[in-house]
Amino acid sequence: MSSSQHNLSSPERRSHRWLGEQLDLFHLPAHSLGMASWHPRGVVVYDALAAYGRELNARYGYEEVRSPLVCDRRLWERSGHQEKFADRMFQLSVDGRPAALKPMNCPGHCDLFALRPRSYRELPLRMAELGHVHRLEQPGELNGLLRTRSFVIDDGHIFCAPDEVAGEVIGCLQMTRGVYELFGLALTTELSLRPEQRLGDDRLWDRAEADLREALHEARLSFEERPGEGALCSAIPWASGTSAERHVRRVVDAICGACRR
Image 1 (spheres, one colour):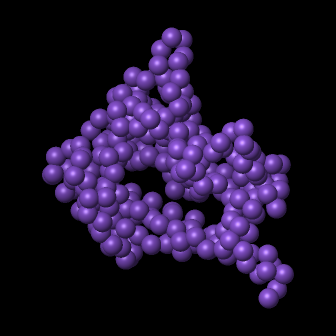
Image 2: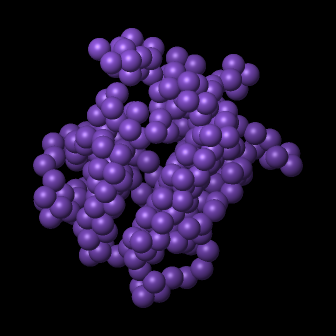
Image 3: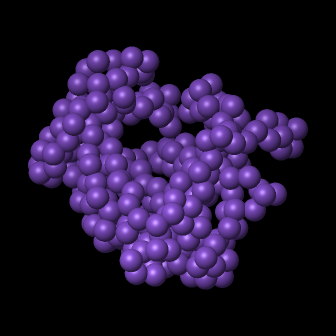
């Protein structure tokens, strides 16, 4: 057995947390549960990934935006997050009013889109953000960088006409496939269908599911349908989520080869 194979032979040494400390990239301090402290070498890797993400977003026609980190509770009530995820959000009081650290970027991007009347000529409008989000995960759910309370999402939202949905989904699939192939990560694809508790009528869900099926077929991806596993992840009161999900199989070589991000 080579020395490198021996070093990765025990479970603790297969962990990205062990690799992060050994390579002087990051550590997880006890004083900030679920939040990483990035070392200078780790920031070099982080910045390289961010630069790659920005270049890729620009190539696919996304415009970079930046949404507020702290938002008044009224926004979270309007989006549905306060009703469904209040116990998973960092709740604050700002100027005597309840507020919260953003757990996702969706409401901020919808607010940007709705700031003024839009022409159909502006569609599709693609927004991207390296958004810093916070989620109050329970201590037993935390898992290194895989499940944290503070992280950055290379996030995107597309505002488009109904007849543009399938084409936009194909573009998203091509984009993500290129990213994961670059890092040598194996992928499987699932189509998560409407959940029992959902917003919107069945005609809207029929259209959304049909558009996603069409996009997956045109992208020549094999996929498995998952009835009832679609997400109610509204950023505005009438938006629900059937989704095409890409799952990454984590392996030791992939963790090492992707530079332990």
